[in-house]
Image (cartoon, rainbow, N blue to C red; front, side, top):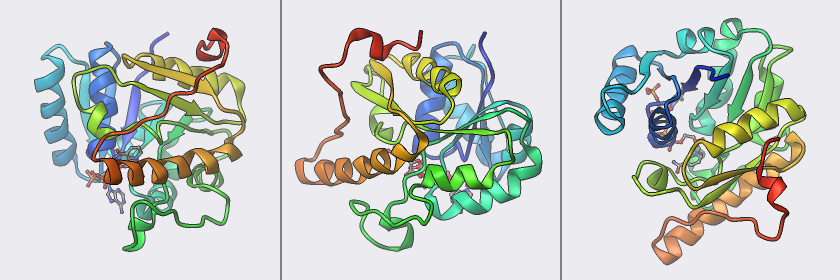
Length: 229
Ligand SMILES: NC(=O)c1ccc[n+]([C@@H]2O[C@H](COP(=O)([O-])OP(=O)(O)OC[C@H]3O[C@@H](n4cnc5c(N)ncnc54)[C@H](OP(=O)(O)O)[C@@H]3O)[C@@H](O)[C@H]2O)c1
């Protein structure tokens, strides 16, 4: 069954790229923002590209969070904790929060090709500490370039999905597979997000060095690894 996907902090390149791809796949998407006006501007741009029939609307983050049980968080690391604390009363019980946050050093004025240390191990594990009990955090979409996601070609990239709840992992793998070219892979427990998040810093360094939009593909696994059921 298709569920409404709410993208919190969805007005930046990462959120808009995901919203565009899911809207094209026929999903119902709510773009969240600190400002309804900015959310609606993003929605207008997405509709222009995905077609007028696209099921995309814009809301303030708290309303978007309260209106869905399938949430994606695409804010810079420096805003992640404060936003999650603010949204705490808005979460529906048993929601899934997909965290795509990468704790890049650029959050504190450093290089985007370097990581910050996070006490909990990763941004996703920090998120898991901040959401209400019963909300499952899944780390995913860290390594998918927004530049590619915002284009029209298939996204040649695997999405490593980390979570402590196998059912939530399946849901997110299915969501990943709705994007042409993307394969979701069960990458194990949420603690593995610390490795997956770091790959992004490496990819940013590669993109700078080679002037490209690198992604990752995992080879050599059986076909079933790329299927959620
Ligand atoms: N860009 C990529 O290629 C990419 C790929 C994978 C993962 N990521 C990760 O995804 C996240 C978003 O990336 P992005 O490039 O889209 O970032 P961004 O453009 O800097 O930020 C996304 C949105 O977050 C909101 N925001 C900014 N600062 C905030 C704060 N302090 N508190 C609450 N909301 C805030 C803004 O929306 P409003 O002003 O409308 O509220 C902004 O449009 C980052 O953690 C990034 O590491 C990015």
